[in-house]
Amino acid sequence: MDSTLLLTLALLLFAGMRSHWTGRLLVLLLLSPVLRYGLAIFGFAIRLCLSEWAGILLRSGGFNVQTEGNVLVRQVPGIGPVDIAVDPACMGLHMTGLSVVVAVFWLMWHERQANSEVPFGWVLVYAAVAFGLTILCNLVRIMLLVAFGVGPDSPLHELVGLVCVVVYAWLPAWWLARFTVARFGNVQEEKQAVLGTGRWVSVSLGMTGLALGAGLMAFTAQPNSANSITQQKTVSAFAQQGFIVRKITKDGFYQLTKPGLLLYLKPLPDWWSAEHSPAVCWRGGGYELRRVREQRIAGKPVYTAELQHTNRPSLYTAWWFTNGTYQTIGQLDFRWRMVRGENGFSLVNITAEKPLTTHQLAMLLR
Image (cartoon, rainbow, N blue to C red; front, top):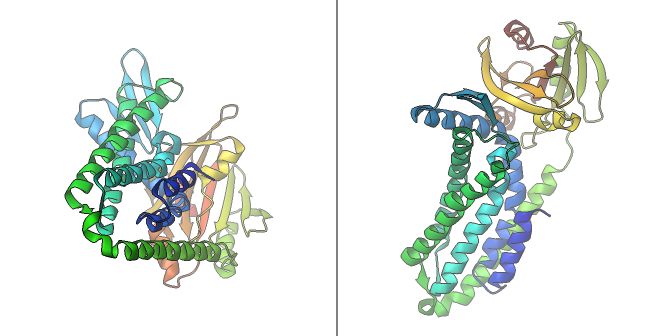
């Protein structure tokens, strides 16, 4: 169990099973896996977007900062360039679920103090604003780390993150909860006649949400065979460029090699499955993804990055999604195409010991 799930269960005990919050909190129990799924799919896009925003704001403030994908480089007088990588840990997005649970607690607390109840529609608005505060918190954290040159090895690195979470997420959520209850809350004495019914409706909605969520997770866990026609077509195209198939795993992943190049072809069994991201797979070998950036090669989008290891030379990697005729890096793009019935997509990940040239990538993207 992760912290979001445990704290939600604690809130259920705090609210009591007869509270109008019971159903809402049962739905919140699904938040943790949903957040992990969302970050697994859209993590790179969020990191690149936050990096770009932070770079623009810092440059507008007079700082000598360059944005290189998910890395912000600041020239510090007397020290030289200081790199701050916007990685999942640096973003603090692992605390997003915790921040939402804290925001929910603030709202429950102020409701209890005022003996009132906020309509569900305004609860959703409040939750959306609270989630937006966590994004703002991450953006401010990145800017402060770069502005003051606080690297990941500094003891202040985590302290800055904690201060940002408290100041820009948790405290504003407390004030927002107080305002929401005062402005939109309904005093409970005025609705005693319907309160019992409302509680059961809330519980029913929560149980329905849990049942649907459990069914969805069970359904998505069912294995699906990869699109073999598309897979073979893509493998044949790489074979024509001199790649040799070295291994085929039980999951249908292909490992192909060519002097100086290592290529993985990983099919997505269905539109809702999370891909086997290079950030996850290479981390198992002790590598960390750095300088992730979006580029266009021969008019086609591609991600490029550097793989750094503490005891080994750096590697250089690139990846994109293809169904044999169409290439993209947009998560919504290829998933929507699969929903509409187009051929299945695969993740293509090419890695080399030297930086990949535009010509090399253009040949692979044909």
